[in-house]
Length: 304
DNA sequence: CGATTTTGACCCGCGC
DNA sequence: GCGCGGGTCAAAATCG
Image (tube, rainbow, N blue to C red; front, side, top):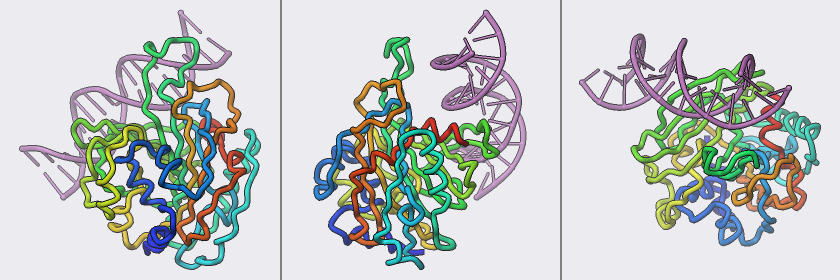
């Protein structure tokens, strides 16, 4: 249980996982942030062209790079950031496997999260945008945790649960309890690896977290961001409120935000992936080949 | 008693 | 047009 990861991330020159996330709600755009001050030292590639409604960005692509345990593996995995070519469904499978191979310390929670934007108008040519229901950008996180619903500082109300095809685990639907806040999230477990919880956020919080944020300055200094709500396990307060938990995380960012979704599943060269390793600043690396880590969300779902 | 969860029904988009 | 699957609704049940 430590905030070790987070703490160290903070120490690093770049913002860490939690900070990034805590900024989501109040930043102009997570992507802007990413491309701007947030990760000035990182090479941000052009936006990912999300053809799929949800482009899942797989953070951990290799056993050792995916998650870093600050508890027992600190210093062990720091530089083990391999890349896995993900260029199709086969690779997707491989990636899944890699995730499963992820080593983590007992009692720790590995947050392997992927942030992907969903074009609100990822509509197919068939119908006009006005005809189709507009979707908020979505962001998915893969969290290695025994707990389905992680505390993230916001209050959620479950409004539905559905069985997922080809998966023994149901998918739960949550909505932010705050009035006028239409943020939703879906929580489901990977059928391949029950220890992995996939949380997908949709929409933006129109209010600050009801729980006292860890870094008020960082949070409140920014205006509300409209497309990215603080995900589970993403906010600092979550870590604080769950000292017994020990989070490991690595991050990849990408977005397909403004693109009208293409129809193929090819991950565009516009992917912008940033891998954050909380363990140490040394871990804060960028894989220039990370586009290859991009896996169409729909494809992953297919597997499950 | 209010808030939240559960759960079956319903709606809608999509593919065939 | 039809069936399937994802997402949401809403009444009932449960919880604090």
